[in-house]
Length: 381
Ligand code: V47
Image (tube, rainbow, N blue to C red):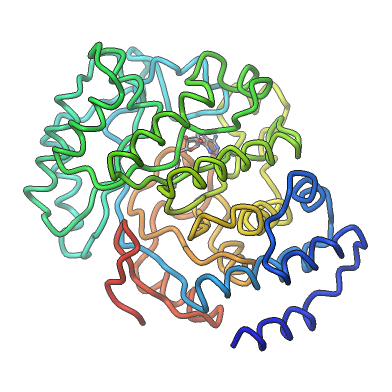
């Protein structure tokens, strides 16, 4: 099998961009890529060579398996004290905004109840930084969901939300994580990372949790035995160097803790947010080329993170399906009702039927594997 893979790579990769030749040699040899090499990949237009290299690395790690989870996104509130700070976000609003909502616990339980017959395995819970919702609201939410759906795992709250709760409760982030874990939180999502570069953060999310703090909260979670995900928000003002510095910080933490399950590049959507207006980018989304490149370079650079996920909500189901031949082994799940990207103009569906996910994966020549939040296999198709 490995021999066949090497031969496949030789057939598939004759980089037309000569700058990629030394990188292809390192990929063949299974060597770690450096900062400059990743920048070269981002700057190259030789998408097929980049994709073939990422495909080789992925097949070495995951064979032809493509993971997916039957999940449901629940966003308990869109009220966010950072609503004027995160200029890229269309979801968060002030408490007095006409669109502001905060779910009473019963409403969140009812939303979860609507999908009972769908076999949901993961609730993905994130929301705004509400000035008044206390830690107890979240522990009651998690405990209540676990009682009602003991078979469903809970992926909840970004590092930014954890740090916010620690601040309003005057406790440490470790204490918040411990309380959430005790209530039944299984894993943490990767949101809130955006781009770690201080210059970019100053422009798109001034005064939001800084990079080192985001990393610290994930380190703490990993040490408490809570696996987490990680993300990069690309396609706005960041440079290729900013992207790679960000990935390098994620790779360093993974070397230290091994606690990241998957990396998800997130494609910036410019509608209905101040950044999109400022850049004059209304209607100008990331392109398929950049979407596939971010996914493939993620696979090539993050050699210690076991899975790379394509978020079809942001890049469309068609790009996500093609990504399965560009190094990607995880397709975002059923989702049911997505709000954050749709508030920013996404024209993808808000959720996907289970069968359609299986169809997309099979039609890409891959093996669909239904997983839980921790990548335990539930069923192969
Ligand atoms: O943190 C906000 C991003 C994130 C926009 O861990 C935007 O499995 C694009 O993190 N355009 C939340 N992106 C989503 C997220 C996520 C999604 C799927 C799976 C997982 C996981 C995590 O969405 C935010 C922010 O980075 N976001 N506004 C926008 N206009």
